[in-house]
Image 1: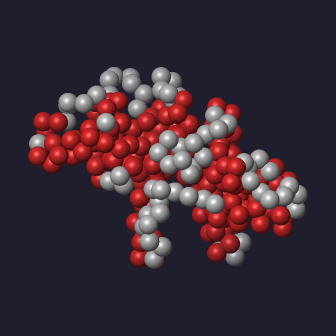
Image 2: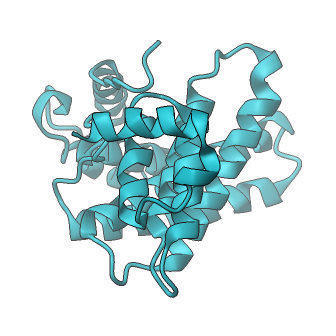
Image 3: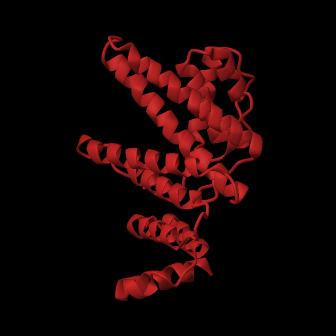
Length: 245
């Protein structure tokens, strides 16, 4: 049903944008926005989430609209080919994703479904991990001459750990509603990566030993060799119907 609503919206949008702008409720725009997300129709998805904000009632929590925009920017960035000519656009999209996830976080969790809020926390955490890795890379590229980069890496690492702690306490079996490959196991892998960067190896081992299903390590992890082998195995089992070419 949602697919037909989405398609009908696109047809009407193309013919008479001004007429449709006030026809849907906030929730309907959210539903169609996620439909556009699943179809990888980034421009229409952005339009739907933004228009949904305009349709929100006074004092309505619009965290989902900000979150939807954040996820679109994040996936749009990830789908760019890795060639260097895309670097500026990729960075700009990721910056936009971070802004939207932060806006969603500022809206808070009141009067929204738990699934919406955990998706906000998830998106914010992915952005924090990206920034943490970025600052660590810059620190190494500058041959350790700018300790502020390392300080920033720690700040964003701590943010990601705090938000994923909250997320997993709210929903220990978390799965992103629009890409089942982004789930509790993927969060554990991200947390293991953070602890590796922070050189907290025991905590990294603990995260890897909490992996389940096809992500589970072949053996109990208690040293770096086992950890590297487990991480490689976990990444080889990743899937994403939305980010694959």
